[in-house]
Image (cartoon, rainbow, N blue to C red; front, side, top):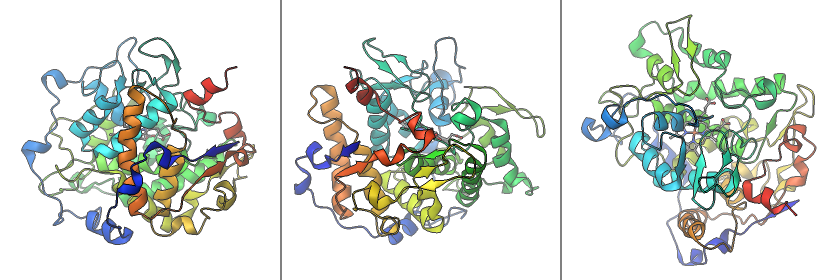
Length: 423
Ligand code: HEM
């Protein structure tokens, strides 16, 4: 099956938008001089504007019967504190507003994640999706996957704390062994004020989780979107969003207690307990500085830097039914020769590939509310593709993925794709 590209189709204005070309490494190092630095010249701290309330209407309320919680601890915490609806079903605008208010996520990134969630796993009529299990949409007309049912199109293997679907028969709850693996990466730090689950630590954690999926999950599959884009985001978001910002650490420091709170873990050392769905924003916690939002470019630049150091992260493919049989597909074949394993790492090509591969699944020629958000998304995506001087991806041969049982059992069809297949 070929997926055809239509990036230009969703924004006829694209050719009129010209933006300055960016240079990856310069931009990256200006934005992120050293993830472990206490103080950097570029990021300031202002307690009043960065404080995130956990009081009054934002007091913690655990989920009750009929409330949805799922694989994303950030969204679960937002629902538990009323920054998105407590039932766990929110609209794109509510996701944009909530992720900014609580974490300082860039509007463009939240829009991208939100639109993708609606189209693949949510309800295109009310522009909303469930952060947990699917079921009927708000309007009750169409079924939806929800994030828990999004295996291989959004949710994927090699998550930090969530287990691989085929290893645990559960992809949305935290596996305590995986959490402990992460938690113990700072066990050699005796002074609690020095503990920091920073980006370097999370990247080595990701490396070992990647290897574990190869060694333990016969159906491990690393998909073009769920593996190449969402997987790094899941690791990077842990530090970039959960770390507590302060005068001393304007880019944040992620302590044991803050990590536990955001991952719904209670109890003392050696007796940690996980309660599903009770992720909490810690009291006295401060988000990213205003003006220092983590945006699409931040995510792609950081992801590319890690892929340059560890190119295996970009291997689209999987195990072939037995552990330790990981086989990658040829990127050139997958992308009709537009990208190869080596050109993917050049310039902004990784961002070029992922953005185009993701928008390729979005529908064209739709009317109504969805048309409005697709136009808005095009205004975000097209200038980036232009600025990065992207080679045009016109098709993807996803039939190459069918040999991987982890994919063929769950081809990651979105709602619209599955509806199209109904005669
Ligand atoms: C609209 C915005 C968002 C959407 C649609 C979204 C969606 C998702 C999805 C589908 C996953 C599962 C990925 C996987 O298989 O590993 C995930 C995981 C994750 N998300 Fe989000 N997310 C959003 C915002 C956030 C925010 C603001 C945070 C802030 C902390 C966050 C933190 C995480 C983390 C840490 C994981 C990995 C969980 C684990 O396995 O340990 N996300 N998210």
